Each structure stands twice: as C-alpha cells, then as structure tokens.
Image 1: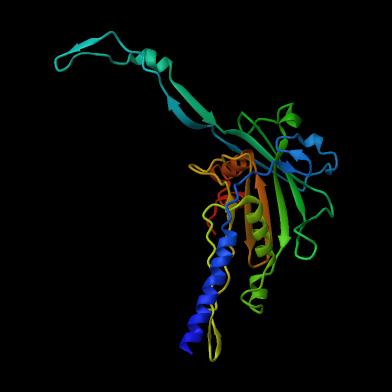
Image 2 (image 1 turned 180 degrees about the vertical axis):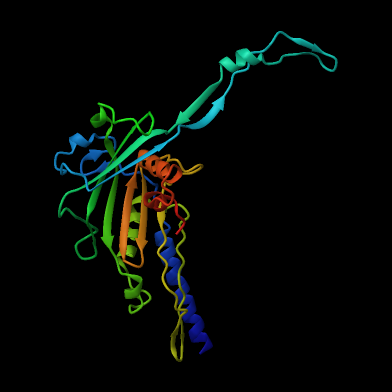
Length: 293
C-alpha cells in the first residue's frame, strides 16, 4: 500500500512538473498596439462606427508632478582654504539659473467610454472560447489648466484612443461550490490565453496540487478558489503610469462572476491616478489597476 501510494505521489508530482514546464515557456511581453485596426492615440473622430453618445464620462484634475531635478554647477573662481589649498565651489546664483526640472502629468483629464450595441468577440476557438461582451472603447483627453477651465477648442484633437475594456462572464463563487475542484472556469480559460499571448504577468506564481489516493478515496484539502488580479507591465514607482505603450489587466468579481480584461495606455493610468489622489478616493479604475487582490 505504501509503495502504491508512493508511486501515485511520484506520478502526481511528475504531472504537476510537466504542467509547470509547459506554462513556464518564456514569452516576452509585447504590448497590444490598439484594437480593431485602430492604434493607440487615434482621435475619437476617426472611429466612424461608434455611436455619438458615450455610455459614460469621467473627469479628473491633478497638479503637475516633478519627475526629477538636475543642476549644472558653475564654479566660482578658486577660493583658498586653510586645509586643502584651492577648491572650486559652485556659484549659487549662476547654478540656480541652470536648474532643470522634468515634469509629467497634470492638468485636466476627461475619460469617455463607447460601446457598439450587440458587439462582442470570442476569445479562443469556438469549442473552448470565451465570449467578450460588452466591448468598451476608451478615449482620454488631457490639457494643462485649472479644473474650472472650459474644454479647449481643439478638444477633438486631444480626445484620443487610450484603452479597451472587455467584459466576460465566469462562474460565481457560489456556483463553484457545487462543481469539482478541478473545474476549468472561463476565468481560467481567459488567463491561459493571456499567458500564451503575453507571457507571465507581474508576480505570477501558479501552484500545483498533489492528490494522494487512499483506501477511502482521494484526499484533498478543500478550500475556496482564489482569483487573483494579474497585470502585465503595471506602473512602478509612484504608480502614475505604465512604462509600456499599454498594459494588460485581468480581474474577476467572484460574487457576480463578472470578469474584465483591460488594455490601458499611460494616459488612462494618469486619469486613474488623478481620480484617486485628487478628490475621488476609492476610484474603481484605480483599484483595478493597483489593488493587490
């Protein structure tokens, strides 16, 4: 009996190892360049098939952030010292005139979202694919100025393609309680396809499970399944925006089974940052991009 259990344990470990090796294929992250023939940065007016009225509009404002400050030392005429002889020192006024600061972000942000009625896409093949619906197109406009300033006359030129939001339906946590532990959910299917296309997300770790057969049947520790939020090329540092042309985020609400795949450009990250830090604490988009779980 001990030998049989040991052999089953080895077989299980081998299977888990084989799965880990398969999922461990290194795929370099290449950001999505846009969607449906449109590239990031295309103006809203270039999307002829979208309806005139958005399904949602949001606004935000924030101060410009100082990224870094550099200075160039303008030396004084050599000044004698008792300790080391002649020493060159910076001329304060001349150096101050050459102070250089780099700024990023700031100003007014407007996010508008559009969806084409009944438009949807299948992620994967027909037999094992997941339907993405609705499909939401996101446009961001940003300009410098106070939060009370009216939109500039060239708003249409500033309002540009900055993100995509794909919604799908997966099994709820309540439904999973009556399903086998190894049941493959729509969330699992979407994650597998994202892994194959974009590689491993930040902090990715997939744990295997070992089943040991006994006289009374298979023995496992039953626990509720976890559905992590995974991000490809998320923001680092202060979290203002991603360093990639676009990041990818996968999330799921286990209570409702509603899943989201979000493509977000740096400008969409900035909008979320401004909302969270300048008057809209707990902003949903910011939590989606930054929350740990």
